[in-house]
Length: 432
Image (cartoon, rainbow, N blue to C red; front, side):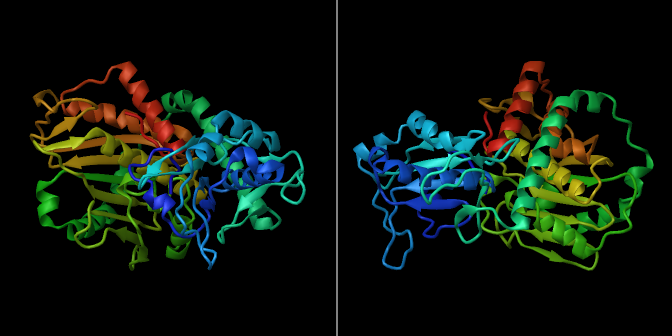
């Protein structure tokens, strides 16, 4: 789950009914009356969530007789107003080094007010507790959130290793953003044979996607396709290797594909004789298919939601593109191929007379496409994509796509889209 302070409906979070690795519940209370120990408990939960994968602390939900958070009492106006963002932030970050990044929102659900602390994963360095408080906090400890919903000190080697790995990954992303322009301008051209190496696998993937999506969608509806692979076939990976790496993807992970706002309940993967695959359930929307071959090909096809007037929305398309590229940057880097130059082939099919809705555009003919299919070829290394270039590369793809829709992005629009996508990957929020 990508953490965001904006939800169309907070019920999914508040009415979860069970604490987990990303959600913690607290009964209704007044911040000014819970005392030093009570506030230290909040600090422990926030540091633990930030050191793991981020999440939510929901205030206003009590426990039933079985200990489950199902008493949705909400909070009084006085209780809710006591949770002032600046006051809570100062107290929490008195204990945390560096400061925990979080937002405080007060959604109203079913005529009841709740307080939700939206906690983001650490960006560069993990949070260490720099002060003690009775039995709640220990100085010099890294707190983590466990799968059984506990916020405790990290004492297992696997937990400390996970924190270190995330910190190293974040540092790589920071370096990638700093060097992106240089790395891109100095990138070698894709070798002509690189696509031919994977022709048979790609054709097999397209055949499978056609079966999953159905002939009507495949022939008539706008379909996004992406094929991502290195210059040569890989030789030393098995289906089991691929499965392990796919299941360990975090930000984004397979649960975020094809785009987080699709809110898919599950995206199961399975093994065929040649690849690890996943696809949408029968008759589900959006319809999608993806697969990854041990030889190094990732292929996906996604049916794009078609709006009235034969149009597609740019926001959905951008989300899909950046999720796909960031996911593959993480995947190939985890396979030890961070320095490998990847060929990125992105297609949008059945585009004749299709209109592209740009922001507040009314969808007139100025953004209409006059060719049947769009094909764009870009090359980047996996390390670039994992290091933050997925947003820039997606914006670059979108600029070329807009040309096919007879619209030219200016530099200001390009920069705004690139920055918006960076923010989306960091916080799970796409700004329009």
